[in-house]
Length: 290
Picture 1 (cartoon, rainbow, N blue to C red):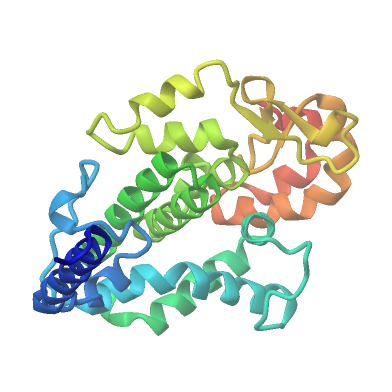
Picture 2: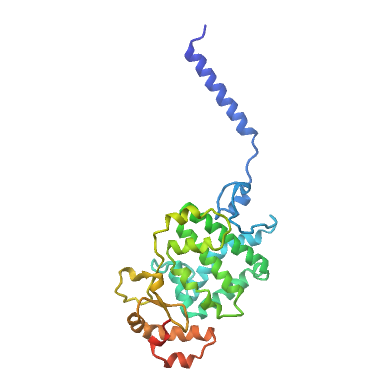
């Protein structure tokens, strides 16, 4: 009569064999779509909330999906090339946010980078539908990143979506001011949460909203010599330059100190915004504050 241990061993082996057969019978998963959608999540598409965004797209149209995945990185490399003449982001101080911020203040490089992206991805830039799909992609993916606690990647998604929105309204360059892209570049986590809550119709971010309920929205003063710790102030107290509406200061004093550096940048952006540049050069710096 076999011992109890031997019987248990045989039972375990039989169970393992059954599991191996079951695993072998399951067809391998096609990770093509998962790879393209990896910015969102690797969950099964049927089980994932799209967060109110329209992600319907024929699976054969991978050019749009590829564009949404590669656009952000390619755009930053192009900005870097225009700013520094280098194709590689080598400087530790040149973060993606700093780079976009620098280009925004210089205006010409920013528009040139968008033009170059248009040449690189003509099949997408020639289609408003595909560009809007990419914006929905970033909104959905960014919302999921906020839920997962990956705020850095969510911030990146918000910047990407806003950049494409700027392109879609490029015929009316005054929208560079009204959209306040600089706000997105300098946004803190609560502002990024608010950005996605305004652009999704589901309730998936309700819990995150509770987490950030006591956190105040903040922004950075554009004066490098600002006396505030980290140059950070409450968002509601920051004052915008009324000419370019892309730089902000915590006080009139900081704006005065920074005017000698910002004056020429302000003129460049004012040209894009169709303002009288001679007027900008002549007026006192404090007259430009909101």
